[in-house]
Length: 177
Image (tube, rainbow, N blue to C red; front, top):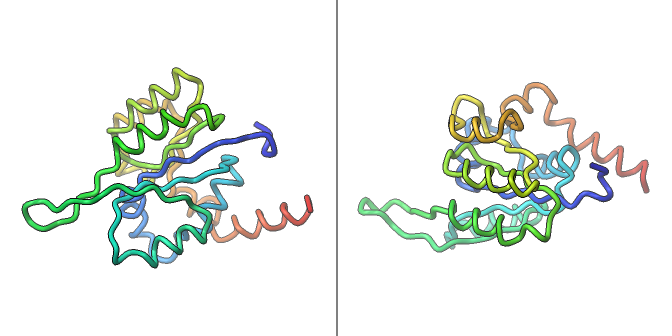
């Protein structure tokens, strides 16, 4: 797809991404990830779905400054006092309701609960790819549903030298200007 004509969206399971990349320490940058999504998957809107916790307001502002749109779900507490903000159904419904807005969708998660969403997007010719934090934690059901159209962030970090993604993007943008 031509970069200028593509109108692709990324639907991001925020908690799954956060838990998956926190082991990469400083090698992972949300800002650089947003640039990667735009450059390699022609993502116009990258939407992170997450539970809203008031004390995380600085994080939310930072993610928005990095080019992400945020969709919040109310959180609850389990019997042990742990915060619960399951966004799986919310993300799925939004991806399906917004199908007329985008050409193709990228789903960012390792969660097998999204296999059905992938199947639905494929049957509507709206599926582009899944991006998962790492291969060893990615659900078998999800890997099976995508039939090879999957990228692992841990492989991007090693193979593409993630720090260069933003520099390459900036060079290409300057050439077009």
